[in-house]
Length: 276
Image (cartoon, rainbow, N blue to C red):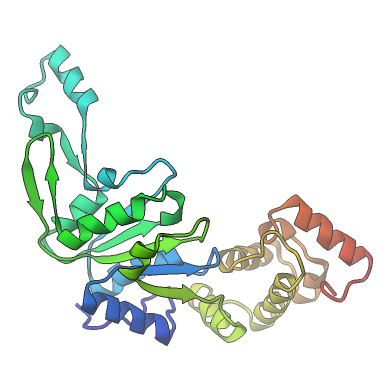
């Protein structure tokens, strides 16, 4: 197992991000990660798992998610079904207790990575409830009275898209890192990692057009890294030459909102310098 996190195959982490991960791991603090969509927030947890040889547990947060769901779920429906049809374990409530992602991470045999993805989708009480359980490293199953104690403090990666403000009490208990959108030099590394056989002329022209699009004022959704990768792959499949890219072929892989598409078309017609 690697001693320090330094990125992984397919994921290029900046020196500052690597340092943040190492410090969060050493201090046992959750790492709260923000950044534009497509900057690799979710993939960071997978990269740590891969690089460090750790198991990973994923908890995708929704607007209705409650903290207890991450700990365990009591399957009353299955127990009712078994009671009606003669299930063998119906008298044993413990048989119907299923650990959630947080419960699994706390009870893992070795130190795991726990990804809590898009925490800002949950209600305002969720973040503080969540860290209470993580701080204590134990929880009680109310239906049985069993106390579940954690074996290893997970490496916790929490992502947020800043849809709503997070409580100050929660923020105080986390480390924070903002993943900035890649500069062209970093983007070239990313493209080379994922598309090692990519023609250099096509890559340079595609990046030029991509960053030009991102600078167009008032775009509702700027194209992101994953969309650039998909666009370049589509250009290769379609046999589209670099000199054709100023005409913005296959634009639907980069621009996903009608208003943005219409704005670019108007600027293109008017000979705007942003798209020529």
